[in-house]
Image (cartoon, rainbow, N blue to C red; front, side, top):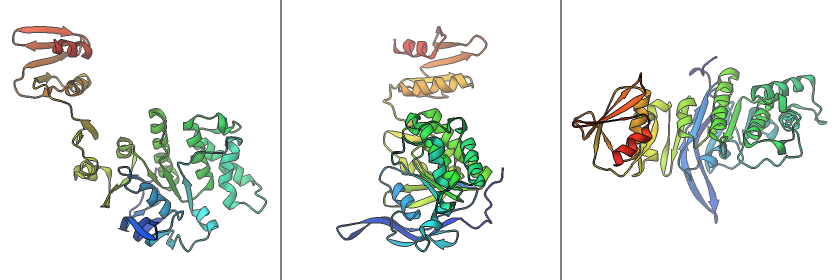
Length: 338
C-alpha cells in the first residue's frame, strides 16, 4: 500500500473559501477564510457537532451549493469554471438522500457511474463492464449484482452507492455521513473499506461523520469543525493531544479520555474509594463498571481492595479482614451495594 505523499499536489484545495447561505437577501456565514487540502491516497474525516456546517462545506466544495466567497480548486482548476461533465469525471459524491431506485438492480445502479465516460447512447463497453465488476468486487457485492436494491439492507445499499462512486472512477470521492443509520458492524466495515480504497487506489476520500472513535482510527487527517470557530486540521493524534477534540465536544456530562481515545461519562460519586489490583483486560473492564457506578478508583489506600486471580478467573473483595470471592463483575457490584 502506498501512503499519501506530502510532495504530491493536492487534488482538492480551497482558497479563502466562505460557506453559508442567503436568507432574506442577506449572507449567513457558517465558516470563512477556509484553506483546506487533500492529496491522492489520503482519507480525511470531517467531524464536528450538529449545526457546525459539515454538509454545507461538502456541498460547497462539490459545487452543489454556491460559495459566499473564495474558491475551491479540483485538479488545479476552480469548481466554478468547470463543466458538469468535467466535474463528473473528477468527483463522485455519495449523499445521505434516500435511494429511490428500488426498481433497479445493484448492477444497474453501479453502471450509472459509467455514464460520464459513455457515448450518447450510454452503451457499456467491455472496459466499462470490467470497471463495474471490479467496483462490485471491492465492496463485496459481486454476488448481489442481480438483486434489486429494494431488497437490500441499509448497509448493502450504502455499499452499492460506494460501488457506483468507484465505477465513476474519479480521483476524488466525497461522502456525506456514509455510516448514518447503520449498525456497528456495518459502520466499521464501511470505514475499513474506504480507508483501504484510499490506500490501494490512491483516490482522495473526504467523508463527514459523527463516528468519532472510528474517525480517530481510520483517518489520515481530520478537519475538525465547530460553530463560530476556525476549522482545525491535523492528524487525529495531534488534535487529541492538543486538547482540540475535548474543547470541540466538551461537556459537563463527559470528558475525553486521552488513554483510550473515547469519551467518558461523568457519574454521580458515591464517595467510596476502591483500589483495583492487577493489570489485565479483566481489570480494565472492572474499572469501567466501577466508574459507571460512581466509585472512585485510586492507587492509594482505599475503602475496598479488589484483586483478580487470572488462573481461577475469580475476584477477591477485601475490606479490612473481611474477604469475599466473586466470579463475575455483576457479583462484585451487587456485593458493593450491600
